[in-house]
Image 1: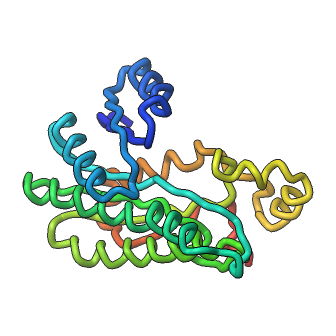
Image 2: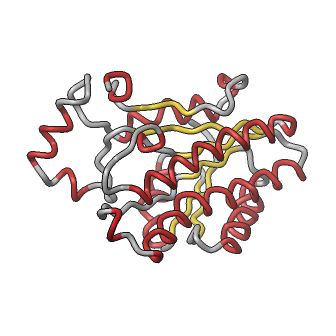
Length: 224
């Protein structure tokens, strides 16, 4: 939609396809290595992005991990890995971005990628659901706190989308049929279904919207 961007991942190699595609389309893209479980890197990467881009207007917190495991078998290491990635990292990236915006005298917008598990309980996904529920609470609290700075904070809650993280489920044909029966539109989400809402929330068209989580789920939540 015309924004200059800095994209992040643990490995710079993982970003090559994305940056090449953006540049080929005439956009500006910078790649920055970032493990969001490292608070120091959250701050450093955010500051690097601001330097490369000439300031920050938008942050999208999209890092996430999930591992399905019965709750009685969840250990501390798994819990910490998921919560540190999905919640702690999002907070410290948001904090660093908000500091950049405030210190530069800029307004801005932060978009957090939540989940349907912020709204409904999913068995065997307790660490993930807990982290995403926390992310929703964080979204609302930061929206209330940072409104006076001119910083809006919202969330997108994707439904069932096939990604590298969720491939294991979509390879199960019985699971696919079961889930499709619960989605009124009778299809899984395509990543392109998220583009419009992300651009909208990042734009001035959403200037009076903050503290909200918007499901993109083919009607799943409306039907349960």
